[in-house]
Every structure is written in structure tokens, then in C-alpha cells.
Length: 68
Image (cartoon, rainbow, N blue to C red; front, side, top):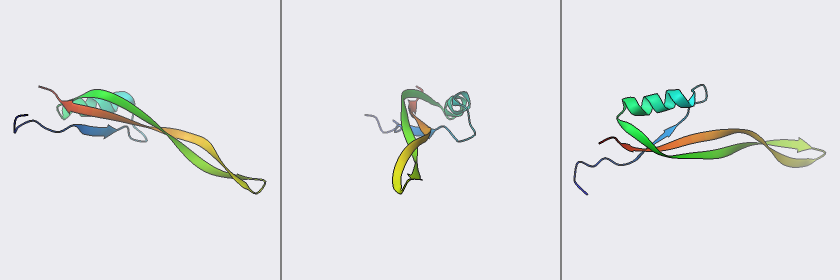
């Protein structure tokens, strides 16, 4: 690897941001997406004295590398 090689960067899609807006932000910074990851977000709900977990959304993260 050469000294000027930049590391990979992680970009998270914001709460009020579209995927396209995140990709445009990435492109503006000089990065291109190489991998998309989604993580579920759960919330605790108490029903009849027991705690259950329900899906509440998802977190989308892009792994990006510099455009050469």
C-alpha cells in the first residue's frame, strides 16, 4: 500500500436523509460505496408483565472507499 492511500469511510444514512442524499454526500467527499449494511433497531414493549422487543426501524450504513 502506498502512503497516500486513504482508509475506508463509513457513512450512515441520517434519520431525515434519503439514501440518495447520503450517496451524494459520499460522492461529494470523494468516496464511492463498496458495501451496504442494514441493522435492525428494536424497542422494548411491556405486555402483561413481560418485556418484548418489536422492530422500530433500521439503520443503513455504507462502507466507502476513495474514488481513484
